Image 1: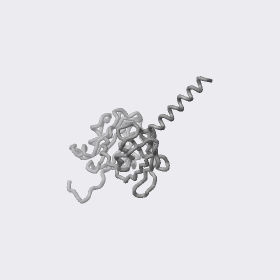
Image 2: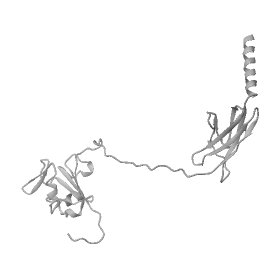
Image 3: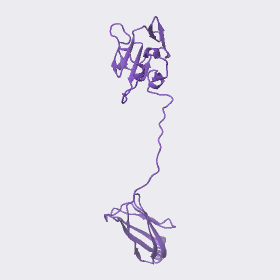
Image 4: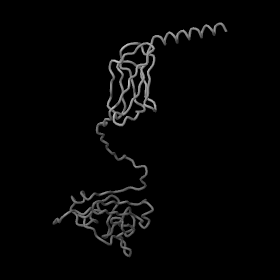
Length: 233
């Protein structure tokens, strides 16, 4: 019991000694335009680790400051920083330091985002062969079928196309999502001019259920966007 009294006496004397040696800074931070309090504004004593953040009323306080002259820095995202220089702190005195910050646009450096196609597509359930319209324009062909014959997995026998050994007529032809397959004899019912093609895609088997009418392969053609004016070919 005697030891407890001794410890309390030392603690109280230390607190009283500290209270007689330090001062305090307190104040309120507002928006210079509207006068509204700024919540979460950082208030720091320059050159030290002492500081505080404003509360819901825009108020703050910093205690246990040794008497002297200080620079008080105010900073907050979206506002211009402000420094109150030469703030004098005295023993057992609360020095008021208010600040009104001016809104400032935050400038950020430009960000460049580059998209990359992964080398392996985990969700891909079939192989694809793609020929762009620009590639097709550089080929000496007069018909889309002439391009199709050059694709891997496609062979021609007796003037008929076979995909991966399948029979002729088992393939499906789409142009801009609409089927142009000959319902009676198979094959392509409508011939498309190569200059009109934006992209030609061949899926040689294992395609999605939406193409259930195809058996050995699918030719999907997307036409170019129409250009302005006329052009003689």
